[in-house]
Image (cartoon, rainbow, N blue to C red; front, side, top):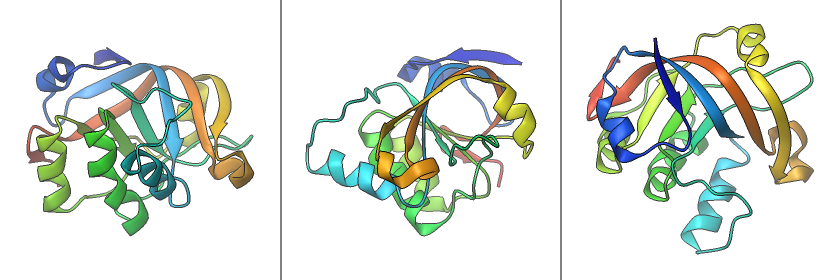
Length: 165
């Protein structure tokens, strides 16, 4: 297992290889269908964010008292957000499912990576130390949460132009 911590650098991403098993610790953000396009819109229109996404990770999930588990990342609203979020500093995208070849190219272009997490909500939820909704609170559990995590398990699925899919 490779231990990685946010914030991440280009050098951190450059060391990863597909199929690496990682334990991620630090601050990660959450978003899915309703939130990611809004976040991209703010960034593309050069609006100030009240969070610092440089070197961070974003998990494709909602957050509820029942826990967290990744949603399918190749939904149009989610996959179309990956390149612009990477362009603006997100280094890791955490979800599930295959992504298209253009997204693989864009991840390489912006030196970001895509991790898949095991589909075990209880295990992932146990890795969350603290959670707080930091943006889009009116969206409830689908808002953008800031999570403090310790040893969140994942597998590198796309990095440096290579994909396991």
